[in-house]
Length: 122
Image 1 (cartoon, rainbow, N blue to C red):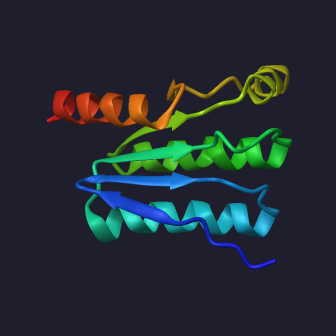
Image 2 (cartoon, one colour):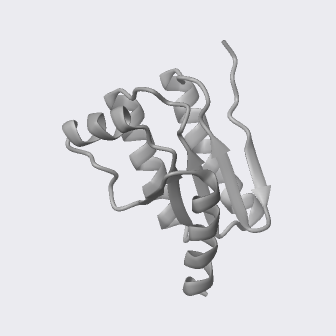
């Protein structure tokens, strides 16, 4: 299945939603697309909405972790939103937690939070 997660631009913030379980290759492509979009669009923040994910495996958890680290290294703020309870419990059991990244319940909260983070960073 060919699937490409859209990356929307809202001012200086990028928003992407993972709405299906991604193959390992698709997850790596999403990671690459996000970091390239930050550079191409001079984005100051990224929101990753994972509310549609009911489960995560260790590879997907690592890709999300690595992606958030890369976003921060590029100088952008990052927020993960929509973490389902079972996903949160799985991440904690894997020993990952969410890796020094802010999270919110929903996209509206994420957008408000990232705007504050960007404003405070400037």
